[in-house]
Length: 154
Image (cartoon, rainbow, N blue to C red; front, side, top):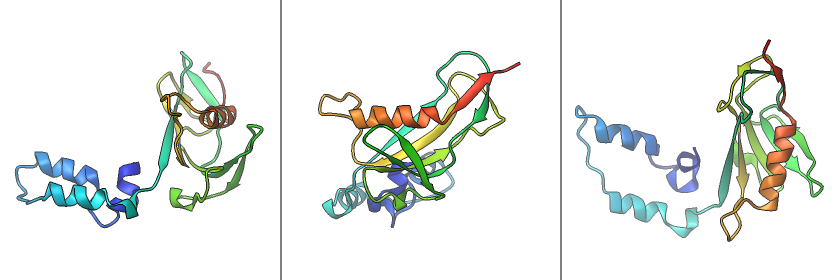
């Protein structure tokens, strides 16, 4: 997701298309990988984004009673998170306090362990220098998870 939306990829075909073409014997194409890598590594196009994919981690079948809506959310120092506005594109996130959440599991749906609940896209890194989750990352996880209320499936 992030690679296809990155500044460096805006003028190119989506990376996924290159993978499809690689295995398609019916389309001839010539690709200068060095030129693409050079363009994609240009410092002008480097921006820092992270994403969290929220999964159902509890075993058993659950019914989603409440789920946070898709859009822009803001995380406060105290770990509280609030919905700011409906939005459909992560580029509207302007700072590291805001994040774009794409809800996947909706109220009324039945989910099981391993199912996707949603995706949170944020500016900046979520891992520390030690490659462990940062405090900021943990606050986001706890805040968004609080928005999902489930009950056991009957």
